[in-house]
Amino acid sequence: KIKFTPKAHFFIVVRSEGTNFKKNPEVKSSVIDKMPNGTIGEILETKGSPFYNQGIRGMWIKTEFKGKEGWIFSGHTVTSSEKEYLEDKFYIKNDEWFIHYMEYVSTPEIYDLNESELSNYKVKTIQKKNYIIYNIDYGFPEDDCTVATSKRVVFKNIHTGLSYSLQGIYSETIVSEDDPFEDTIYTEYSGCNCCCPDNGNILYYLFEDKISFIPFKKQNSKGLCYYGTLEGVELSRENRYIKTDKTILMKLKLPICKEPDNPDITTSEPIDYPHTLFSAVKVENNNLIVERFFDKGIPESYRKIWIDSKEKKKIKQE
Image (cartoon, rainbow, N blue to C red; front, side, top):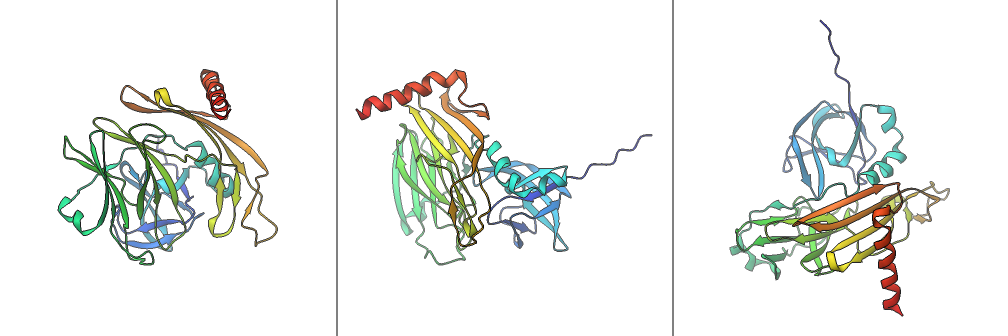
C-alpha cells in the first residue's frame, strides 16, 4: 500500500497593516493578536468556502502564531507550497497582488437594514434604478478607536425589499453618481480607524436585480514609491471610457522600487515598470465582465477602440 504524505503549504501576510489573528474562523470573532505584514507561517487547516471581505476574496486558514493557534483571512496573504518563494517578500508584496488585481467582479453582501433607526443618524438618500441608496453617517468622533463602523452605504432594492452593503470596513462615503456612466455609484472607503491607512475607491454598477462592483480609481496617475508607515506603490494608470456601451479601458503599470539610502525619504520615482496589466470592464447581457491581459500590452482586439478613444479626447480639447 502506497502512503502519500500531504505536502505542507505556507502563507505570507501581504497587507500593509497586517491581519487580525482571530480565536475563531468568523468575521466577528475576538482578536488574539495582530499578525504583522511579512509574517510567514504554515497553514494547518482551512475552513469554509471562499467569501468576500471588504471586496477581497478569501477563506479562513488556521495557523500558529506566538505559540497559539488561531485563524486568519487568506485574502490578506499569498500562499505557496514553497516557503522559499514566500521569503522573497519584496517580489511577493507587489507582483503577486498585481497579477490578481481585479481578477473578480464582486457583489455586496445582504445587510439587515433597520429603517426605523435611520432618523437617529445623518443620512443622504438617492433613488436610482430599482434602488434607494442610503449613505449613513453614524456620527461617531473620528478619534474614537472603539468604533467598528462610522459610515455606511446601503442599497435597498425597492422590489424585493432586500438591502446590500459592503461589510467589514470602517467607513464608506458616496463621492459621485452617474460618473463615469449612468446607473453607477462611485465611493471612497477606509478599511480601519486608528491604524495604518487602508483606503480605496469602489465603482458600483446598478442592474435591475443585482449590484456588482470593482475596485477602481478614476484619476489617472503616475507610478510612485512610498516608504515608511505608508510603504507601498502607486500604479501608473491611464483610464479611457467608451460611454456608448459603458466600457472602461485601463492600462496599468506596476512600479519596482529601490530601498532609499536616506531613511527620511517617504516617496521616490520608480526605477522600472516590470509588469503591465490591460483591463477592459464592460457590461454584457446584464452582467459586469472584466477581461485582463497580463504583460501583453494592448491586445489587438482592443487596439482600435483604445486609439479611437484618445482621438475623441483630442478633438474635444480642440
